[in-house]
Figure (cartoon, rainbow, N blue to C red):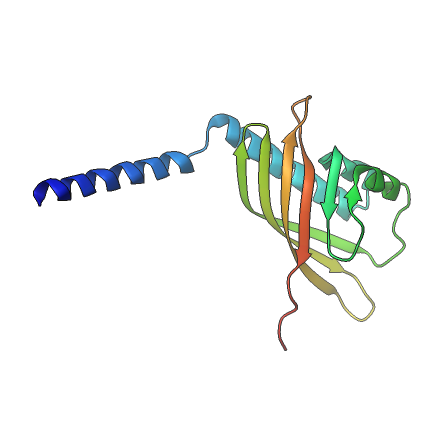
Length: 157
């Protein structure tokens, strides 16, 4: 019985050590995560200034994005949209990065966005959950290659 207990303790210790090692990021992953977070912050700053040409910097040339009810978003579509400023209500953006997972030249980001539309009747706030696939480009920059987003359900009244 004592040998079995030691085996279980040893296995638990090894399992715990492997979890700790998996949770620790390498310096390369830490640098990539910092670059991704900085790129998202730059996008938010540019979008809040309505500088859509600068906001293009976050998108990879092979971009495909999905949001319910609208056609797929592509780099070409974002480029075209950047040439025609919105005439609708002013929207401001905030992002909370919930998680970044990095493996080699790919990263997955799970984040929550808050869109605030200024309206005469009061601000309309929408929360959107998103997943993004980031790919390190040949020049070393991290850019969003794929994303999928959907609004959170409206709170029950």
